[in-house]
Image 1: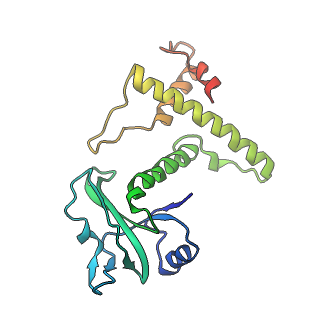
Image 2: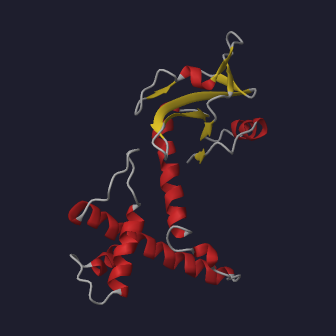
Image 3: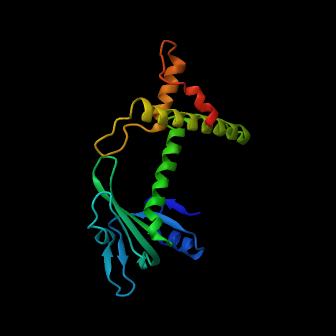
Length: 205
């Protein structure tokens, strides 16, 4: 029921179009963008509003600001990026800024799923199919395999051996990758003895 997008999807026309159609959105902006307080006309950098946050903290404003001439609400948090370096994550919103950070996290989950379907998992982009019906069947099969790998990876991570946590606090590999490696090992190495039955998870997909 809302649009979630990263920093490349920013612009006055785009934000204005979303506002005019009352489409709820949470879009990340660069922290050095100018923000204007409508009541005073004061121009400030977006980061200034959130510079007091520590890693893991978040803040939102229930008052409107101007971004590129469009009225928006603001929310932000301080996170660690993929290199483990703290950085601000600032979002513009149509409404309900209190939901911004939690909702935006779902974008990462969706992006992870797409990445697992592509280069870091099933390489679905390598297909040369052109027939839409065949492509639809292929995507359906990959989705089943994706869920299977996720469930296997989750079970192994919780019950057998936890995935190593890197310095920036994220897992060294995704649950899908972890599960896919286990399934591949079982199928490709007849001498391998698994510690649990991966095939029982197929009934859960």
